[in-house]
Length: 190
Image (tube, rainbow, N blue to C red):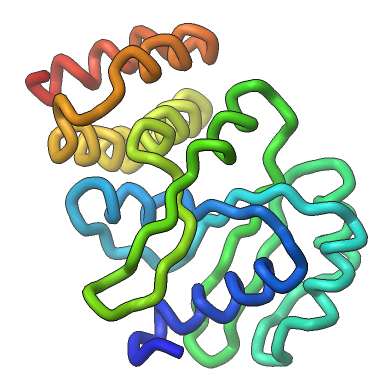
């Protein structure tokens, strides 16, 4: 395990997801901090594809230090949505989001990348820079959250021309957030 309590919690959860063959990708502020400017986060968002049988196995195998509702995990695995794990040692919350089976979210999982966390740290699957921008803009559409906008803007400013703008524009068009993406690109000075 890692010497960093934050990474230790993620690594423990990811090892159990891997053990039960649950495809996952870290999203949220952790992903935007990896691709953009560093961000302090009090929780970890993990997108995944999980069957009810995998949810039962995951709930049974996680160490006792994680508060979880096995019933809720299984329910979310069956119909989609979000369930939480809370680490009693650190208070860190892990939000597990079972993704809908849509063309876009299928792309998100197909494009995820294995990234190291620190020079000698563990590696985890993370959504791509393009997908964290799109996901942040989607979440912002619902919440109008300034945090979502600033996280997406940070990634755009850091990655700039290295982003796949053809992919971004095509997905944004299909998701109904093209105007927001164009505004983000302009504000980032790209």
